[in-house]
Image (cartoon, rainbow over the protein chains, first blue to last red):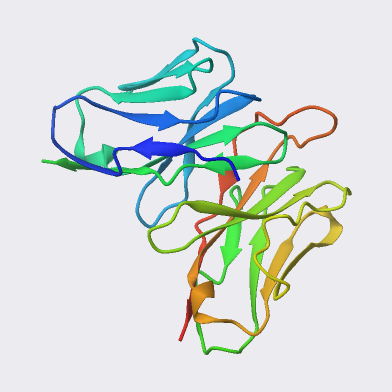
Length: 111
Length: 119
């Protein structure tokens, strides 16, 4: 079982604040890294699929970076809004069929 | 429907009973996964189906758990003689591309899950 760690486990921020959290994974045998957002009472939805060292992806106020050599990815949220409140999951992939998920970062944005 | 559909959304059962959870993936998706999330834990891989290949059952926690996928579409996860530790949210996900000699970087599309409570 591969260890994928996410930190912090939970986070409370004020509306308008920017925030970031980390996904750490083994640096060997990397193939891809995914970020998912899981809102309460909904299904997880993909945010980013990242495959190359140095990848930077952006979707609106959310962006992510990837460092495969040192085994980490950062997710950034600029100007947090209440609708950003969710659990953010990362998944590390080394083969075509095994997604190793972290335990997630629970974000609460306080209006 | 357009998304992954799971049923039932909630299931309460007594210890020792059998339960079946159903997943209807997105049409045309060849890969199908089952995961579960127990309270306070991350997503735990259970089983993976890819086309007509033999499923990867390496994540099934015991022989009380089994799954099948009929006609390359609908999948059923069966838990026999349920125990309290089986209580969790069971998530199904499908993906457009599977292994097929290359790695799958395609995103997973999840259903809303089946919440199982074993009393």
